[in-house]
Image (cartoon, rainbow over all chains, first blue to last red):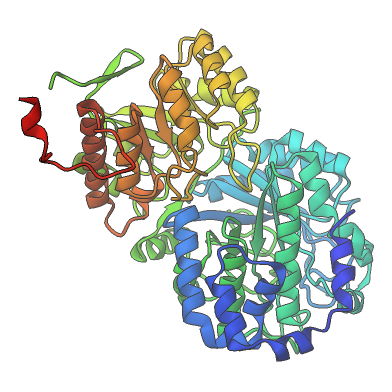
Length: 369
Length: 257
């Protein structure tokens, strides 16, 4: 059995009816509960619960401090290729987009690694598009072998792979996997992913499980907020994390909350989450999953990220370039995959974290193989 | 009362509150908390130690007179714990090692059998091994035979602040173990630390409750006083509990004179 069963089971669920029937007493009861059921979680995601943001925030803050302390783990993305065979209507790397395409050589990757390492960052997230012929497994393995000499942790966010391929990258030195489902609603998924291997919903949905089985210590999932109904997407993403946590006890499961910028990559969405709703999703997730790491990237503005710190976030990217290249002077950057809003460099983000009474954590892993 | 030191790994600890380095809002709070509490041993996750970072190295915040207890947080197996321990020693973190083998990210329960295997290996390599365990008397005896310098049973899950949920099982360890019993994890309040010491625990290790308090410095001191108080009560031998009231000045006392 995979998480697909759960996705299917909720396809017949009447969310509107549930939200209509949710009363203030249901929200209060859900906030008061130590362990939330799936429907308690959905109650906190309901429009009705928007009136309870402060008590939800207080609880989210208390749980986050208890399990993570006043700390924010830092990471930085490194894109090594933007070649892509997929057509995702919202993505800057969509194969139909006429952008400059490139795949970094190992020498260029090393130059980037040196430049990033000089900022003090120790956790690297390595990204590519999906172009297996241009970024074959041995290229990816070589990139990881090289990068692990510069960073305490190397995680990947690439195209979904087989368990064996994940195993190879784990052996090369990758310790964690990020794979976003993008959108859990199958109909929306079909509409938004029109060509390429990414059209296979189930293969993507089950990638985190294959990663966990391959032995990655961490698996990070997410829904790209803005591609489908915000509340339902956050709900299924939370259930997915809960499912993975229960099924793979050895795996640290975490969630990202990427929010689509309006009119990103020429794609405009009808499903925007405003700041208030974003905070509701974040605090509801924390109440449902007290121990799960939550990442918010530089998609969000500096001021907004600073305010999110006490609300349940545990991991920030900082000083990010979201195009290929761009860190080293010798490796000029290409068009970004998405526009970043928080433009601060690492030192500025670190200062902002400290100013809020939080400890920035550069290093939280050791490769011991 | 005579000197009441606790001997572990060739060192004498006059303060029975051990502390941790995780979860603080700022690393600069660590030395302040240590000074206020008088804690003489502090645990640090090797995964958080960055010996390459001159400015940000967490070890720079721990005064030299405080014993460093590196832990193997992140290890899923005995083999990984052993590797982490060896790296810690090579990194100059000393001979002490707290074995933490956790293969369950949901409840963060220690894996007792892997912990035993790691203890067997590391004790032979001259480490001072302090294994973090679910309180199990049979296991504790095996750890003793394997050369553990102490055992560290959990009071309740890490970071849960739920107190001494495993008190009955810890009591068996206290009664039967020949090595010190250090209650680790789950202690959320000074009164719970005092209760552990009253039971006869040799020490307690507290991190979350101190690090995440509004004022970690004062909370460190509060825990230290509670530990002292509990220890004194244990040594002074608590009066037995009775089901019925007993007058402080018995009315028939004159008959016995």
